[in-house]
Image (cartoon, rainbow, N blue to C red; front, side, top):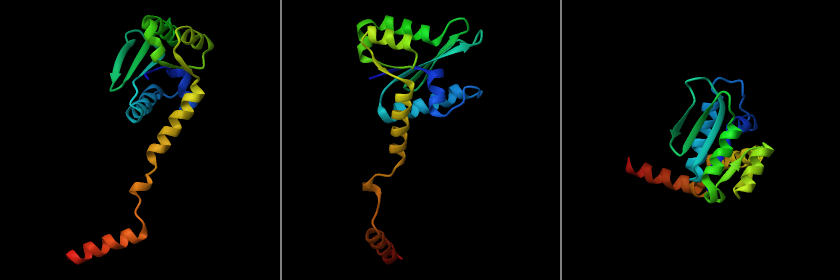
Length: 153
């Protein structure tokens, strides 16, 4: 299930700072990892792009929409949901903005608050960093391997 994400709404929920000059790129990197691990596409919306900087860019399975000054990411997300029509039910919307959530519910899209999504994202990232039980060797197995390689000398 692909995700529509309110970027500036999610940034502080992940412990990033909105006043950081690289906050958007940091979030995109996190979402790229999420997309790779979960195999879900994500579209993230950021508002406040200066003149000439409003654009859409692809980062693998993540599409970032930089919305021009004078409009908002919330508005762009509402338009995107309405354009999806009945296909919107196949998407999940990540925002803590109640108006965006209401539009998502109207078109039957899934809704996650930014806090919920950040929690899931952090859990996924932590589980991917833990070695699985299959990759851990017991001390007996290590001793066997050491003996095997010692004999080769």
